[in-house]
Image (cartoon, rainbow, N blue to C red):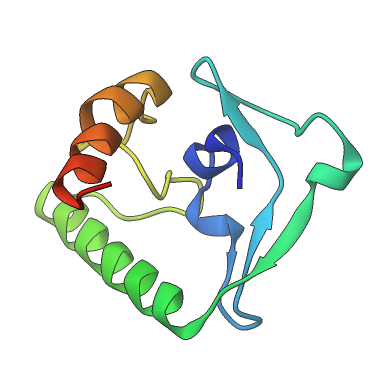
Length: 106
């Protein structure tokens, strides 16, 4: 997946029954938009480990929202800031991803 597609994923894009991620949009400069081409709209199969991790992430996100008196929606971003706003792609890369790579010795 491209960075914008990854950051634009919402819970409604997960097809749990068929074990796949439906790529339908992309996040660009804080705005959701259609992918550049029809070929970019696609389904990606999920393996068991990814399903497990996403379910655990969803559970944690649901619990955090419930503490604030809110509910998780299909339009909520999967990967977001604590307040639900989308992540900034540059911050994600420079602050988080680089640190993760360094910690992994890559």
